[in-house]
Image (cartoon, rainbow, N blue to C red):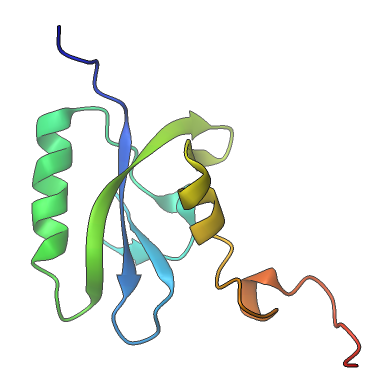
Amino acid sequence: MARAFTPKIVTANHLLEGDVIYQTADDRWSRHISEAELITDEAHAQLRLLDASRQANVIVGAYLADAVAGDTGPEPTHFREDFRRTGPSNYVHGKQETSPQPRA
């Protein structure tokens, strides 16, 4: 028996800056998962991924990630995607910076 399709979002990394980005319904790339297009049809998801992979001058490593509808837009269902949206984990900066930290 075939599994039911799980809604997806198209995600990638920005080619020059490396930030995690998400494909929106109006064909833009956003750094905010809340603006991502939540795709509920498997064939449409594959077409959107194909479209994304043709944009090698903007993005790298596009793939489909499982997501669910949230109060403010799509929310990831897997730890990996939740972790990716917070930015690099090797040191505090950018998205992970919540307040200035004193240096030791």
